[in-house]
Image (cartoon, rainbow, N blue to C red; front, top):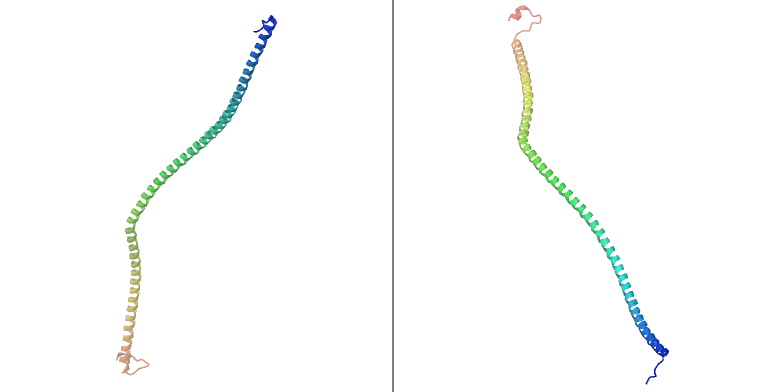
Length: 183
């Protein structure tokens, strides 16, 4: 049986129990501290991971935003180029239509001008033939005049020959007396 304790022993025993309790509480607190420190380290690691991941995501988002901006600008310029090309195409089509009309007009004018050209060529030929005809008529007239002159010369020569033939049988009087001329 336990010996009845005196007041100091009881206090010592209470203190001893209290120390044991405090020691257990201290042990529990140390375990909780260790657990909390471990949780804190995990939380820090998670925080660091989240920060890194956040920074990577921010960088990725910034690069995607920049890429989107660049692509939008490129798309805008592409759309402007397409619009310009469409405008150029429309202008080219209008120009082509105008050229087709001009070609048709030229062909119409050519079809009208072809008979005129033939007429003008024929007119030139007629003019040329007329000039040649005039020259030939002039030449014919000149030749007729020469023929007339030659005919006159021939007649004159024939007259002279006839006169000479008539004189062949008659005596020739050098002095040409008037009586001999009458014969």
